[in-house]
Length: 228
Image (cartoon, rainbow, N blue to C red; front, side, top):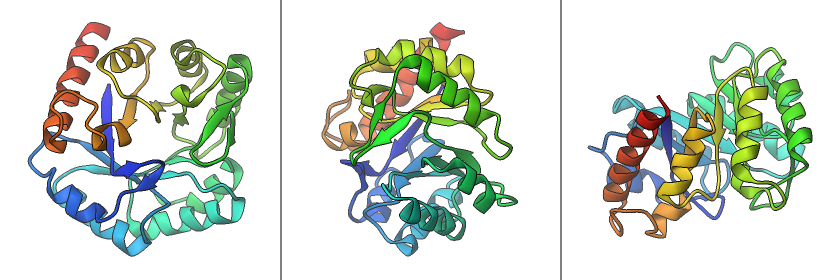
């Protein structure tokens, strides 16, 4: 299981993201991410360059609410130099725009509404969408807003989407406890993201950002050991 630290709060990249990233250098992070809202592509490119210099992989999560803005973000992602794109709801356009880029593309399954994003639909509907998306050439995995579903059990949903997906499933949004991490691991997710909960000091090791990240990495390793 993999932990992706998002330089985000309230579904937006935090101010001075590059400076915040500098404060995390020296942790054992392997993945760092940001949103396509809240910072310019040039600012995000600086974060990506620093993270790549440290040996990390970089993820951009697309939370724009219109097709036009989403496509602009996908185009910008190539210039920023990210390794993964999470999210987005126009997968046919996404695979076309990203063809040949080498970026690992993981769109949202299910119906996404608003900002901050909410996941709508039944478990059966979301799982079928996951199956359909996974069948698209150019879709690497899925970005699942399991804890943003107002009507479904997030762990049952994660389990079914993992079964339906041909690639890795990243559970994103509203994870804030050690127990949630353990449950997501048990459901078979490839990984999960945390951003806002760490900036709010809600994880062990608070209030220090680096301290919380270290503790979440330890919790993740323990959850992975239990899964194995």
